Image (cartoon, rainbow, N blue to C red; front, side, top):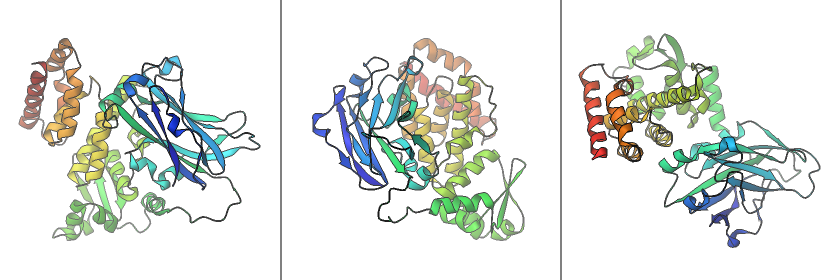
Length: 381
């Protein structure tokens, strides 16, 4: 992806030093939007947007609109982000694949991932597309993406129309090819039994990515692993599938966590199920030595903290010695009322117990519970 410039927002407006147009000179490129003094921008009224500098990608002029307090009243608790086609004369539709991410979320910036996303059509009648609910402000404020009251958004754009340019070297499709291999199971040579479901995979791919699979599939126990299906205990099939998908593609498909969830649930319960699913994936990543996936899960859990899940997340962080995740939980607890904390101590034993699905429901879960209580008491004091 070619660099298409940077815009810096300070004091609720675009910095004068970043007003010129930058041309990526390619059919794909990315622009960085740096928001300095976030606490000042969130004082803006709902519906007030701040525009980036214009930039060129794929022969077209674009700019980003950042709404600190949402674009419409229903999105007032969220940050809204939109990309706008700003050509002087839009003669025909422009087919684009685009993705907004925080600058450190490299998995969403992989060209193969972006190329696999939905194609958006920009036209004279519809020149703007984006996310009304990009991220809840409270989640941003609890995340690692907000540093020194500032954060950086990356907008990746791929224009897929024929621009009659000199042929460019195509982007690597290796992760798409590996994903196809995983989905079709062609040449699969190992099977797993997970929660009553049989899942096939390729031993060399798993071993190359996970030291645990390397030992299991090519170590002293390999004879048994080759002759029968490997039994995976204490893990749901959709969690194991998501982990294998990451192993093959080096990215996490956010839609996988929706598998098996009831669509008619209340939003709060739906979000709690999503957090619980990510907690299970976090444990799976730790179990198989997938450190990067573990950090991705940790970041997601830090950004989706809520009263009904903080206890179980804190128990998980304590159990797996994750200092950063534990600190995020404690920061969240510190801004809660004393009554809320006392209620958590009294009523949330179930959430803590549910966070330990991979240990016996006895002494170890009790130890997790007591450890979390100690953390909350320290916060109250």
